[in-house]
Amino acid sequence: HKYVTLGVDLDESRVIFVTEGKGKATLHNLQEHLENKGVEKEQIEQISRDLSPSFIAGAAEAFPSAEITFDRFHVVKLLNEAMNQVRISERKEHDALKGHKYTFLRNRENLTNKQEVSLAEMIDLYPTLGQAYRLKELFNDLWSMPDKVSAEAFLKQWCEEVEKSKISAFMKFVKTVRSHWSGIIHFVETKITNGILEGINSKVQLAKRRARGYRNINNFINMIYFLCGKLKFDYPLGFT
Image 1 (cartoon, rainbow, N blue to C red):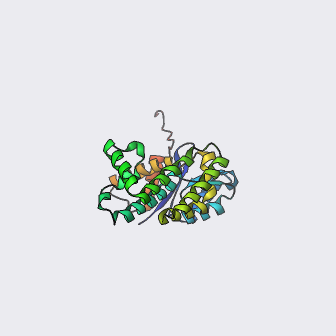
Image 2: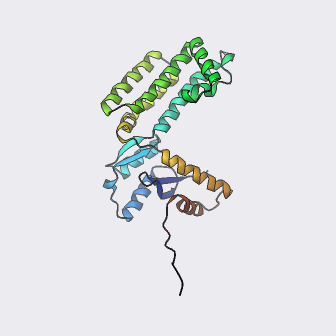
């Protein structure tokens, strides 16, 4: 696989930089690009990104003044993976859980009436699964906390409840939360996510499929700028 990393202006919802690769060096490339445009690295105040260790290290070096907000949806994805691991473990012992993966992973408000009834029955019948589901649902209250102090108090209590439960998949998730604590909590203050980037990525993937792939990485990068850079083209108004 060949990868490209996109730098996106969250205010303008546009791609401002694309570079080959997906490691720490891509953040340095972005910093150099901005510097060439007259933007000092100290001017970058906020960055939203996933939990990739290489990106964390690259952001700290390239933009030392920026505060990090870890993408809410990426954190929730890891939580759902923990929930699914619990379901798989319980499924090995209980055939009745077959075919109910998304009953436990979808937001409750998106369940059908039939799924809602099945969910209520299963969380009563299987205590470990029920406890894991309760913890998953409770965690999402974090995103609506009114301030940083409330968010820290809530998350601390949530982590303690997980440790009391001794559900291994969730205890592993807690370790991730603790090691990325400030960036997760910071969402309460910034409210920024990678949602815009996900929308842009959908456009990029569609373009790639339509072209049946790009052999030349530079052509691919240029197409991303053309589709997602909100470029301004000054066409001539007339001819003489």
